Image 1 (tube, rainbow, N blue to C red):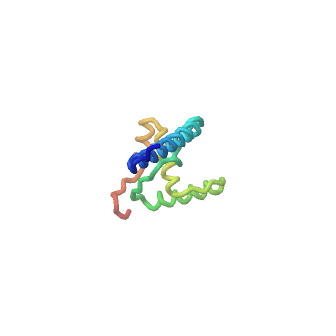
Image 2 (image 1 turned 135 degrees about the horizontal axis):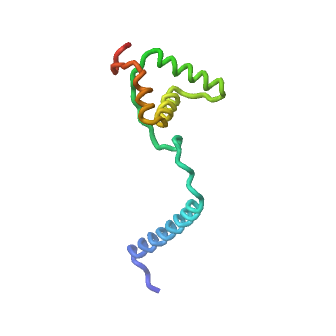
Image 3 (image 1 turned 60 degrees about the horizontal axis):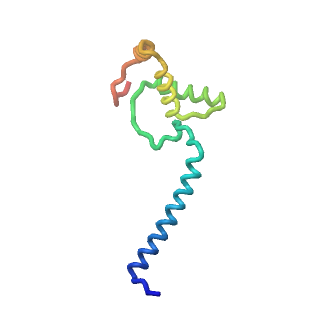
Length: 114
């Protein structure tokens, strides 16, 4: 029996480890791919975008009123939740209803006090 060179021993070890890794990955794939993927929803998004905006004090207090109303109904919501829910509600409107909803707002200059 001939003695293997160091390079052959390293190559044999790497090949063995490579085969073991491939077997583990195949086993993981078979387990993970056998189950249906969970539906993607807002909570599963990978990141958020931070932004700022200006609004009149009356609109800002409306957020607090809506949060209180939701809390009385048993759902604690953040200011961000309220703004996002408003966006989803607006997206359900047709174009004419959307323009009507926007046209009743008082125009606010960004970064300016009302």
